[in-house]
Image (cartoon, rainbow, N blue to C red):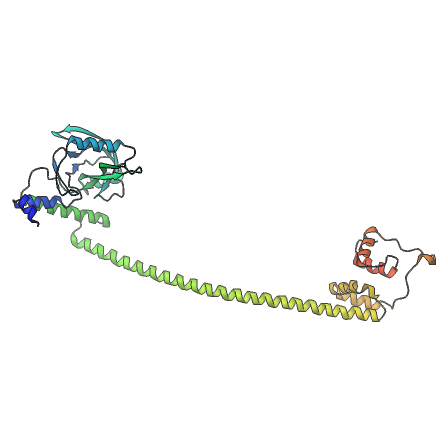
Amino acid sequence: MSLKMVSEYPDESQRFAVCQRKMELETLPPAEIEPTEKEQIVCVFPFENLWLEDYQRWQEFTEVHAREVVANFENPDVIKPIIDKEHEYKESFGDIVRLFIDERNGIRGLFAEIKLNPMGFELVKNRVYKGLSPALKPYTDVKKQTHQNVLWALSLVNFQGLGTTTPSIQEQLELKKNIERDSMKNLAVELGISPDSGETQILEKIRGLRVQLETAQKEKDEKEKKIVEMETGQNEMNKIITTLQAKINELLESMKMAEEAKADEEAEKAVEMGIQQGKIERELKEIYKKRYKSDRESFNLEMSVRKPLVNMERKSLSGDSVESISVELSAFMKKAGLDEKNQMHIEAAKKEFKGGK
């Protein structure tokens, strides 16, 4: 304990009261709150001397302070306060409808009209929290302008207001017991067990939750490890599959080329034999090679029954007429380099070109 506190508060009960006040973020007297979902009026702070943690001194709250708080509340550039719990500034347990200065039940100060939401109503109805404590801090808006005395929140709390009088040591000790009891109830509610649970039950619940957390973390680590191993194995497998696929494609291409070369070699030999035997004119070699590749059995059958060629060319000078062919067949023969007046060329072309007549 500092010498300054001893000099300022020579009485021990006063020092105890001041220390107790410093346990809160801002120990303004909590406003009494009723368990109702309807609108209700609560006192934000009375106009009197109160302890402020941020300034480490007693501060007299006046109507001037209250008017500044109201002006900030109505300013659209300033953050709007919420009803939270324990000055956490997280979930909202209700709305602050309006702020105003008034005198009620002999107390003049800043008042608020509030409305609890279902979550806030349950906490107050079950006596988890019994009062509201304001949080006043500066706020800098988007225009970089700083506003003093801004109400950030009315927090659901259980710390009792000490007012301007000095309670006795016995009262302070009783207050401390109540605070600890209420804290245990709050902890039990957070753990999902009965608010009347004792310390042993709470500790057992915490130990159980710790075991569950450690087990869940271990399972999570094992799953993540397996996932990493699976991903690594999958990547290796994908590389192997890609390599094998490339080799298979290369092999298939080689086989295809080999088959084509073999077929071309066989066609070359078969057609060349037909030419040597006098059954195929050399000018039609490529046409007959295609026929051999497309239908080897028909080609072999035709060669087996065909006799060696005789001069079947009909010239106009002999007096014989040349066979009439279609325009399409004529175009095909010209493209293939065949003679339209050579009957053998015509016959070969007609077999290749289905549209010939």
